[in-house]
Length: 305
Figure 1 (cartoon, rainbow, N blue to C red):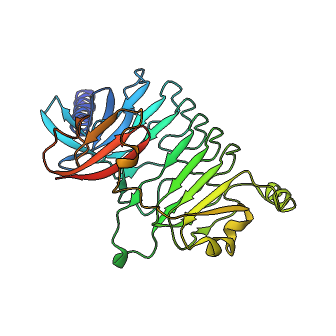
Figure 2: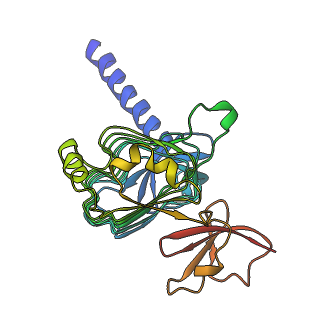
């Protein structure tokens, strides 16, 4: 009798566990998903053994077991995958897990949302993505009255991105943490929108011994810092000058409302609504409203009237 009761308890436990798993986790569109809210899910990466060369992460996904549709607001991880070369993150995503895209050694292109509601992006987000060449971080979507700091770039954010050539940081950035861009020997252009120089952690771009060597060669400059018009002296008189001898001002740093200058480039445009849903690749057929235009590695908002 005791064994029978124990057996029933074990069976009951596994039934409860199975129901729990099926209720909160499912697979769809080649990805694993975790339900995190009544209408929202988290992307936990590729289905095991089924990596994709181009990871176009869905904005909306349906759980076939329940026929319920969810919005993707969180990418937890797509990392340690040598197959993936391009990742497209929908505009619906507002959160990322630590080391989200870490050690995707063949990742060449990443398209992030224009905005995030995070004040701090995750640590090691692109650490050791050795093929990544260009990166534009999202703008922080926050209420300045209820928040002490703006957007922060965390430790080892792009550590070991040995092919990285260009980085663009939004105006909300107030702090860049330790070693965020260390071991990026090919980094040539660093664009920052902030009119007040963000505070810097320790050895953001180079280790201590390399900083000393660079300072001893005052005329050397293999990296250029681009800052808003009228801000060059602020950056020269800040900690940024220990990393950059060449600092240049840029008169037009907005880059978000005007897409005419590059709309006819070679890359095909892709048009999304504000929910991250793909709506086509032509502007003339769109109904009036606000859209996200993606072209190559660039994203812009535009109003169709």
